[in-house]
Length: 307
Image 1 (cartoon, rainbow, N blue to C red):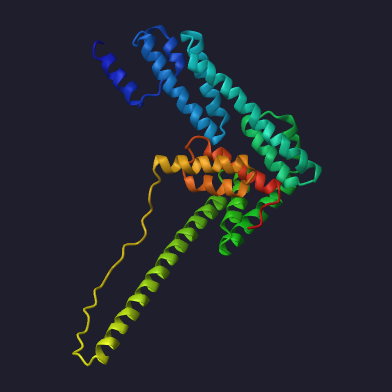
Image 2 (cartoon, rainbow, N blue to C red):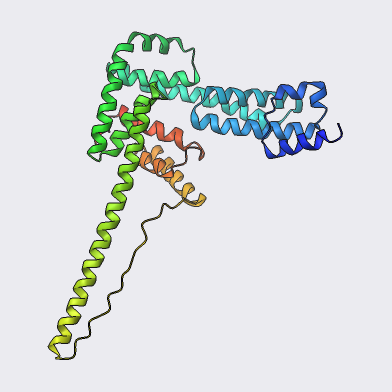
């Protein structure tokens, strides 16, 4: 038994063990840890669930975080946990209010599919929301029809290089069907198209540079011939340029893009905000993914979809 504690503690430190807070209440199991270790581990776990819960708008993760923060408040009177519990309640409230505000206009304009999308998003945090359940049930056939339309539109926009519009179409499908293989494949197709576009721009730049080099060498040759000097054919160096690399954004660059996105969002320039948040390409960076989705919803609500 004397070797059991170090092994368990090592696993705890590495974060590889799956310990539930209820196990800490078990007298035999809980005795293996000091109060300081229990508090530290629970804070780490709660913070991770809180961050991911907000980023993914996941009721399950946020409720887990809430459970863990309540444990910290009850057993350790932890001040950070008290603040987080208030933040979680505010997040739920603000999230619902945001979509309820959009719903006022979309329902009034009888935008069935748009309204259904907003209700579906409310259900992420409020799965028992009766108004949302009734609306989605009433319009289920129309929603199914519109999902197929969005899949078709997404592919069409992608082929026309209207990537933002294409992405919004596929994302609308994923709101209703998070595991839709067609929508996921559509988003991957957009990424491939965009990468190919970058490569084509790079190749065009290299061709332009090569053409300029050849013209320069031709001028040198003509000038040499006019002076009736022995023409020394310049040695052509084969320059193989490296293909453009995918550069990982630094923390500073992410902070800058995030700040520009927030600034644009607050100034109601939602298309610009969408571009900044999309460039981050990090769904777990602060609440960028939440603002990306909100920018997208504002673009749709305000009829700014045209590129």
